[in-house]
Length: 304
Image (cartoon, one colour):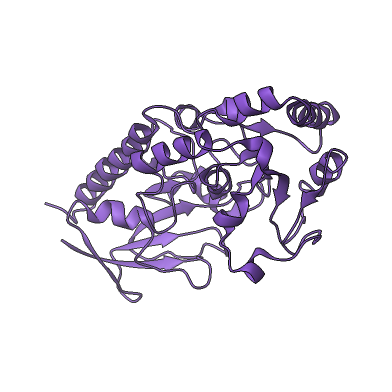
């Protein structure tokens, strides 16, 4: 079945028909084609004012924190504007809401899949963390003040390497022809916070990229919701809150203790990052998306 679509308020260089949620829906036989003038469906993101009032089905796509990009959430709260909303959301029991988080790769719904999860878990078992470098942060800014506080406190233990634009103290890994993952594979810890703590259900690609490289995440963000908690091993994540002194001290003390106790470090590092059957939870999200999308098309008489 051919479906005409258009996109509003998406970022530049966005590959309009290669987003992972589109690929998931294509598994059910839909063929999506671009049509700005007469779309059947419009997908609307956070990056701009929401002004579309045409006849097309309106699907919101949440990729950003609701406390920062309030426009799309005001429209969601209206309850009558969007016909469906997908993205970084909690698993709500609603015919309109579908969780499709950013830790699912932007253009490949098979990242992460079962094979990748097993590979990540096996990768850490094959390494001796006492032979790795201490900690890294790859970032271009600290606009919201949640990166440098933890860099500063952990630097009291050992050098935190920063090859990005923020706090540059080593050369870029690009200079050595390395990918981000290849660079991070050399470290025990990686500081990988979200830009904001975020709303419930908000977890981006940052933690997935960290554990794919084998690092222990030092992470600032919202606590895992009920589905995320069945995918990621929370016991292998060190959390911190830059606005909370006790949280910062706990993060520092945890890292310091691990660095001073090789056996504890190995035990912590060698834990699985992904939980058993984590891939089944992601498949549940895909099944939910497909069912609700099909139901919506029938309701709007686009599907017999």
